Image (cartoon, rainbow, N blue to C red; front, side, top):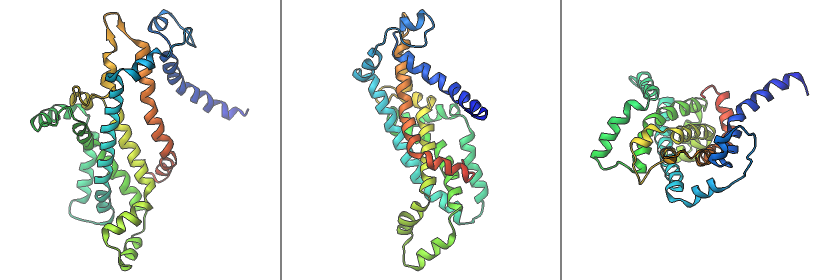
Length: 265
C-alpha cells in the first residue's frame, strides 16, 4: 500500500466511525449501552427495530417525512425550472437584483420564519398537514434549485432553442422533450439538495405539525421516559433515517460530480 493512500483511508475511517457506532448501538439494549464501552453488541437484539416497524407512531413518522419531502422536491423543481430558464435566457430590468434576492431567502435561518408560518397556516387551516411543511421548505429550496439549474442551463447553447422553434416546436413541447432532458444532470443535483434539506430540517417540520404529519425527527424525541432515554431505540431510529438519504445519493452520485465540475455545487 502506497503511503499517499494511507491518509485518505484513515480519514474515511474517521468519518465512518460515528455511523458505525450508531449502527452498533441500535443492536444493543439501553442497559448495555450505559453499562460501559464495547465495540460490538454483547447481547445482540432486534427489539429496537421491531418496535419501530410495529408501532404506528414510529413508522408513520418515516412515512410522514417521506411524503412532505417528496411533495417539496416536486414543487421546488417544477417552479425552479421555468424560473431558471427565464434567468438564463432573458435579460430584464432588475434580473440580477431579483436573482440575488432569491438567494438571500436561502441565507436566512429557519427559526426566523417559524412563527410567521405557524400563524399563517393556522389561519388557513393548513397546520399539521404534509403540504404545510412542504410549502414552508419551498422558501429555502426553490432559490437553491433556481441557482443550480440556472448554471446548468447557461451551459446549453441558445442555438438549441432557436433550432427547435424553427423546426416548429412549441415552447412547452421544446422545454419538456428537448431542453429539460439536456440538463437532467442539473435536475438531479437540484432534486438531491432539495430532498436533503427537507429531510434533515427539524425546526419548521416540528413547529408546523402535531400528530397527523409529525416527522420522524420529532417522533424520536419521545424516547425519553422516567428511567431516561431509550438509547437503543433512538439509535435504531437514527440508523433508519440515514437510509433514504443514502438511496438518493446513490442515484444522483454521477450528477453531483458533474455539478461540482460545472462550478454550481
